[in-house]
Length: 301
Image (cartoon, rainbow, N blue to C red; front, side, top):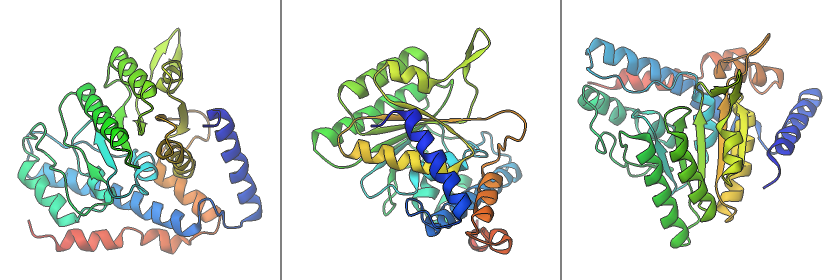
């Protein structure tokens, strides 16, 4: 795989060129950009609906919110295919939703199981999805090790599938990360580790990113703006190509940019990008979640 910084610089230059010429980028066609935005808007809508649903029913334990994670999740999961697996460190509905699960089945499980999530049985593996979510386990480190085992089975059976593992910074001990990443690198496992937005550890006032540490463990680590769905998608595609081709694991870390003018809401940043490229209109953006709203309203709980 190319040097991560070289890859990010190339993506930045191509995006700037595209903005100047306002032409369709063949690497990320306009149709794909619109598809990504709809998925992100629907994920935000579903997240808000689930929160209201659990509040009304006074759920004893809330399922995990994906607010602010839309770009990281959609960009890395939208092109997964049959046989690919997804591991998530927290229980929720986002994974199966992005993979194509029906909204009525997801909401019914929120009602039936949301009150008291059960380890390993909360979200059983669903059939007919683009990829498949792995059973959830309470300990995030144990979940990572299970994901490594699944990736090893793919490699052993010479299957062209990948495992995408979503984890938040700080959920897994440094010693566990080192063990997992060194093993994945040594065995050249078909894995994509996605670090969702969170708080990075600090040393002497500076943030220590997991993507920086992972390189020392043998896994290429790429920090990407967690609100930039297009950059995340480009990096994910490059990483998937490497991994499916036998090049080993990659770690993609969604980082939160701070400073004057920084946009931290993924939907707002994607809206600005689409309008600046004339990929859509404001009227189209306003209607992006209408289909899901109708499907939610049709569900009888």
